Length: 353
Ligand code: ATP
Ligand code: MG
Ligand code: MG
Image (cartoon, rainbow, N blue to C red; front, side):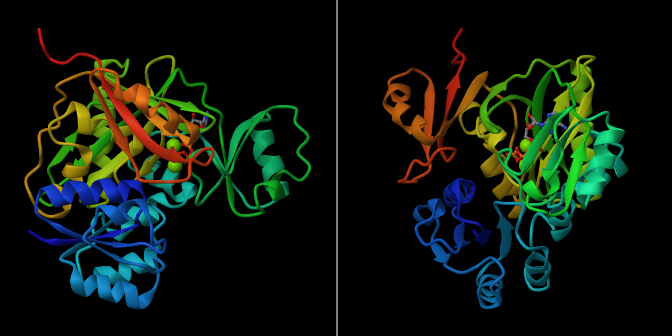
C-alpha cells in the first residue's frame, strides 16, 4: 500500500481516491478549492494552487507516486515533480494533449488520422483558413477548452468580422468540419511493463457540447474496433504512458475513424465501467500507476451511462427507483447549469439467462 498524490480535486479525483482506498492506498489531493468533490474521499488535501512550489515539494516528499485527474496540470509542475517522485502519466502526455495543435500533430505522427487543421493566430489567418475549407469548419481555442467551451462552428456565409477576438484573441485552431455518423471513445490503460488493456468502445452523444450519454457496446464494425485499439496502442507506446487514457473518435459514414482528441486521465465516457465491469477505469488507473497487475476489462452487461447535469440532479429519486441503475453523485451542493453533478449507469441486462 502506497501513498498516491492526485493533482486536481474534482469528481475524477474523487473517484480515483475511492478506488485507491479499496486497495488500501492512501491519497493526498492537491487542489486549491477546500470543499472540492475529492475532499470527502481522500485521506488528506493540500489546499494550494497546482503550481505552488511549496505544495509540490510537499506532495513529492509525502507520496510514493503522483498522478492527476485533469489534462491542464502545468507541464513545468509535472516535470519538476518527476525529478523527485514518479509521475504517471508522464509529463510528455500533458504536453501532447494540452494544446489541440500539438495534439493533432502528435496523433498524425502516430499514423492516426484527424480532421485537417490550420493554426489561427489572427483575424487574417482565420479568414484565410476558413476560405481554404470553403467557409466551413470548427474554430477552437487551442488550450483549456472543455464541454465544447471556446468553440464556434462555421457553416459558410457567416459575417467573420471580430470572430478571432470573440474567442478571446488567444491562439486558435480551425478544424475541418467532420460530418460524422456517430462518436465513440476508447478507454485504454498502459502498465509499467508495457501491457495495454482496452475497454470496449462506448458510443457517445453530446447535448449542448456536454457529454449526455455513453452506450456500450457502440454500433461499430469489428474492423473499426480493431483500429481504435491499435490507435490506442500506438500512441500509448509513443508516450511511454502509464495509466488510463481516453481517446475520442468520429465514425464516418464509411465506417472509418478520425481521432478528435485524447485526455491523459480517466474519462467521463468510461464511467460506465464501474457498473458493467468488475474492474473500473478508476481501479485500472490506480493499478497502473501503483505498479499492480492489469485488471480484466471484460464487460458483464451492456449499459448506458447518463450524465446528471445541473438540474438533472432532481431526477435522482426517479433513477434510484429504477432497476439495475448505479447512481454516482459527486458531492457538489450547488447545481449550476452545465455543471456535472453525477452520473447513472443503467445495465441493459443483468447477465441472467
Ligand atoms: P470534451 O468535453 O470532450 O473535452 P471539448 O470541449 O474538448 O470536449 P471537442 O471534443 O473537441 O471539445 O468537441 C466537442 C464536440 O463538438 C465533439 O464531441 C463533436 O460533437 C463536436 N465537434 C468537435 N470538433 C468537430 C469537428 N471538427 N467536426 C464536427 N464536429 C466536431
Ligand atoms: Mg476535450
Ligand atoms: Mg471531446
